[in-house]
Amino acid sequence: MKRVFLIIECVLTVFAVSAQGVLAESVQEAQHQQSRQGERGRELTILFAGDAMQHIPQVRAAYNPANGRYDYHDCFRYVMPYLEQSRLCVVNFETTLDSLPYTGFPRFSAPDDWFYALRDVGFRYFALANNHVFDKGGSGLKRTLSVMTEDQQKSRDAVSVSATRVFSMGAYTDSIDRRNRYPLLIEAGGLRVALLNYTYGTNGIRVTPPFLVNMLDTALILSDLLALERQGVDVKVVVVHWGNEYQTHANHWQREMAQWLVRHGVDAVIGAHPHVVQDGEWIGSVPVVYSLGNLLSNQRRKGTYGGVLAQLVIDTKTRAVSDLRFVPFYVYRGTVRGRYQYYLIPTADYLEGRLSVSLPAYAEHELKEMHQSVVSLMPDFTMLRLKHIVPADNIDNDASDAFPLVAPAPLPTNIRIEF
Image (cartoon, rainbow, N blue to C red; front, side, top):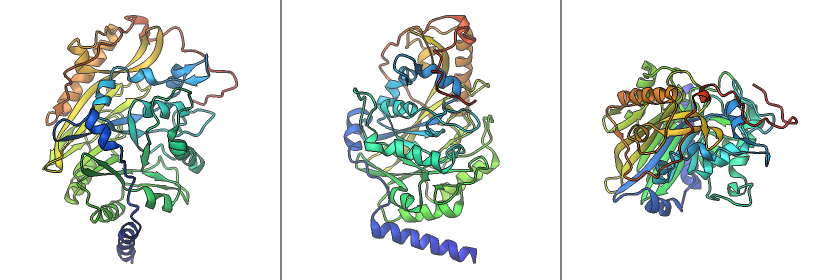
């Protein structure tokens, strides 16, 4: 009887999508952006980033007492050339925007400015199917989605870096919302790329109706893939939240699931959740990155203070994935131009002296360790090299940054922070 219901559900899904023409969001301006910034000849590139987290020390570091706002833009100053080179950027947004009080682990809620900063530096596609998306229940998810869609994400500042539309996937207010916005479809470079997003769970927090979070369930995934068959999709990419935390190699279940996805026509698999970079491989012609590691967090366990940016390369002539390039980076928690913050530093550029940056000895050791680990885990992929890197400002070479004696600017007394 269960199989009968699953078959009926798949048929209904395909019928609803084809009848209403509401498979996914279409990004009309993406082609123009890609031709300006990221496309080289017959290449369409899409960049993927790992866990964008917000622990309370990060919130404190971002706070500006002069205007009561949270500024994260400096975090990305050293990786901006890579973000600008791939104007189609996807990130795993692993927190909620549940307003005050801001909270860290185990149930996250970050300032809206964290989302605005990610948007402003180039991230347009936000993967929400992860274990923290329902940390604040239905109200938290509803507000997160509202912030991401409100008035085309207009900036709260008078000066807006960008007002380009942002898209999310993997979590929805109800079944109608999901039907209208999923799978997410990107139209660029003459291609149609479908993005799908699933998570292994939500930390034991029950997702209460009418809210929906995409679970890593083969029946659900198969239904979504069937719905794509009549849509003229060229490339299907699955962004998946899975695996064992802090393990640098994928487990047996991840590998089996990756094989299953490939057998059912997926063209690339991009993983997140373990908070460290895991090994990558080609399964036939399909690149699989089991974990991108952290994009930004306060975690300092070995391997967690960094990650990779993965650039998926699609040949616009063959309409197939042709390469996967990666950029290892290290998160330096220290002072730049007198400001304590968390800075993403591309490891290869630093080691080759292309950034004019001088790190304290402890940080340089961690950076080298991060670089060597990532390179060893991804021998089948290509390290992305840019010909021109704009020299960045020197980082203050102060060994005390390892354990700062002076805390970041205090938060206002009327704002309560939960740890």
